[in-house]
Amino acid sequence: MDISRRKLLGTSVLAGLAWSGRAVGERGAQGTTRLNTSRKRLRLRHTWTIARNSSDFKENVFVRLERDGVVGWGEAAPNVRYQQSADETLAAIESVRPLMEAGDWFQYVSLREQWERAIPAESCACAALDIAALDWVGRKLHVPLYRLFGLDAAKAPVTTFSIGIDTPEVIQQKVKETGDFPVLKIKVGTANDEQIVGAVREVTDKPLRVDANEGWHDKEQALKKIRWLQRMGVELIEQPLPAAMLEETAWLRERVEMPILADEAVTRAADIPRLAQAYDGINIKLMKAGGIQEAMRMIHIARALGLKIMLGCMIESSVAISAAAQISPLVDYADLDGNLLIANDPFAGVTVDRGRLILPDRPGLGIRERAQN
Ligand code: MG
Image (cartoon, rainbow, N blue to C red; front, side, top):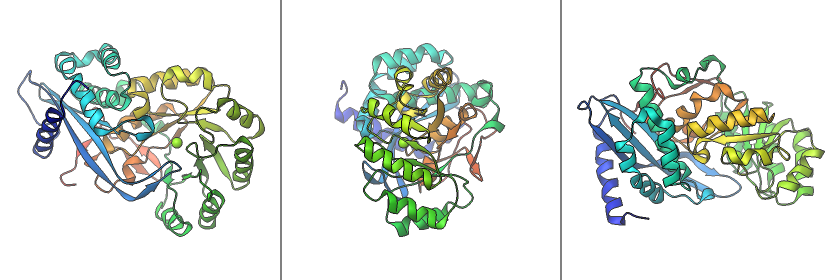
């Protein structure tokens, strides 16, 4: 790390002050370039538990780019699964500040190559820079990103609503709160899977997708579980076995009809070809990929290999969720509900109507800062 902790904290404090004082779209001096970073604690509506861990809040990092009076926002959601933290993410962004401040943001393709070379292990920091640069470009050109990419907003898919691991009573309550979301995603991967899915099935007959988050460690056990889930009307399963168990997953795939999707096993485009032998599809997330540009490459490569594509998320505010939603017309399944799990989302952007993603008809990501959070 090439920046001192004191300097880092100083940056965060200044950025924190800037946070409340600036509205999106504020006119700055012509030609002025600013890059601000800030961190924000996002409180979760319910304790969020998956096979790996449990949390009540997430600390995400925000990037604000400003030039010529136009502002672009980006977001990083550091994840312990990928050895990331807010401190490290802020330091990584800080280390490419000179590059960003001097760079031409319209040339985001070559800029991205440069920041990827400088901070290759920091995928969520890269994602925040990529999202912010593209938001800025879209706003500068007065065009929503999906239009810039040539996509039809009417083809945005339905998103699932995710139900974390909990007691059967709480899970049933959460299912009832999902209202008119037509498809649910249920987290499994613990000893109580049958109890959890059984509890969900007692209160709804909606289609279910399940995510084991690498929670099962034995292929025979996974086979038994998937056959049972098939009988419970589950339509697909994500990451039943650990990412490293590729051969076992290929073995499993030959024995079940339910599509098996890779999540933890795939981060970037280069991972995809070797996964095609073991999985039916992949779950792409901007935070793993390093942003919208790499996610687009992944979509095209997966399509060429005949794989199904899910666009997923971490716990993210409406900044990163709206960013992913911009390319959602290209995918088969969406799981873009991270912002809906947050009680104090600082932004508004993409909305949901009976599960379908509604892309805002506003430039860039189409986001707006909320007055209070
Ligand atoms: Mg997953």
